[in-house]
Length: 620
Image 1 (cartoon, helix red, strand yellow):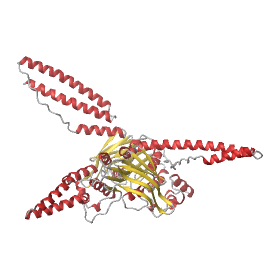
Image 2 (spheres, one colour):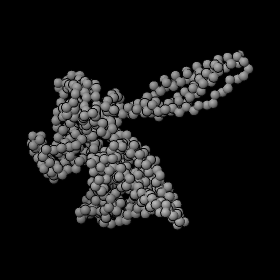
Image 3 (cartoon, one colour):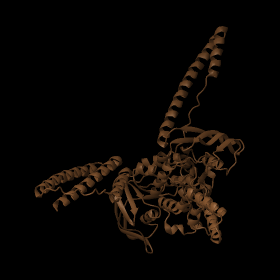
Image 4 (cartoon, helix red, strand yellow):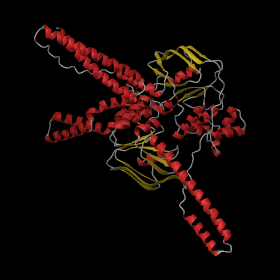
């Protein structure tokens, strides 16, 4: 069954410049589809058209009228004084209306229950139950726990929340509405790693249809089963997740380029032949007619369009030579706000060439830690940098002292460079033509990050500190940043929720949790397997207690034989479990193998417990 159908959709904001042009696609019931494309290609516009928030200029749009559709992009306005709990409960507006009618009928039945009132009340009860009315509290708690919406936050006024917190609460409200078709526009923005992983699990167990716009490549790999890419207003289709899309896109590009080159070589050869035959055919009409025939054939050849290569940033970080072993060290570092301790007893040392990811849930103090390290905030303890260390910092929230200045003027004034140098540097970051005269304050979040990165890359540094460097960037821009960072040979310290970025660069991980920093001297995959292993060990093992076997009757001799037999079996079982311990130690980086071995070990330990109980009973 088709849930969404778009045929020849055209949308323009400026006459003659179509944002979407003859866009066509279908989405079947239950599909998980990623909608990709450069920033500004029309992805969010498409979602607004699907929800009816925006009109279109031509084409047909069909959304299954029997399905409930929900969009998470803009944050709706709620009445003044609405708490977070009120916003979450607004997802159950229909069920609440039924509950109110039930309460009204209950009061009426207290005065006298007629058959008509009883039938109406019974009908409302059935509708309330079938709609999940009795599970509302459970569902709200489940979603809030998964997205990290704390109990103390649920009593706050919604208007007092930050933009990221509002986005999180609005996402929770949408999930509680139990829609049949989910449209998710950058759903992982402002979510920490645990919340993103929870959302992935929710979507994968969701029975309905999902369309998502996202620049989170890890998220797309785990959620999407099909990709629709919007390019120049048209749709390209890929039957797989993000990794498949990348491989297939490159393969299509290579094939198209090969066909184009072969056609151009053939046309060039035919053109050369035509020109020669025309020259020879001045006095020979037969040769001239043959030349014209070849020329007509050349015109009829279906020509392959030359594949477009995307513009790339050509920039690298300026690097300062580093001498010595230590980049910086922290001893007894502590930061608190009143009674709330963000981190304490921090003892860390960083040497040349390291690449470190600082991870932790939202609100744990990662940005504050960075600011304390760089001296932007005060803290207790001792922080010491090496004598030749010079750092560069890209903050999460970009700020320019003069937002009214153009990009060009900003470079001239703040970098003290020549006009040509300013143009060259901006051009390397794809700020070209009239774009350089835009006001800095009118740039998008991604463009501001790109400009600040452009200014940062010119500095001679050997310690690069990044706080959420891929926020607001589309996938192409993220890849540009990654390419520049790959060339940087100094020390890298970064905060990020982009698991693709973390996995690519992190060689050491600091986890800020419960006011402490745990130091993992490994990459992201091994770090995850360590945490998963620890979680398994903490989880209670449900041991099925078998009924004790009765000691055989017949005297002491048979009892002694049973005890000796059980002791031999216990010894064998202990040796078997010891072998599992060796296998588990050797499989620390293989999560799937680790999971299998732990499950088998638990079963063998349960068997050992049973043998021990039998041995104990045989002693009596």
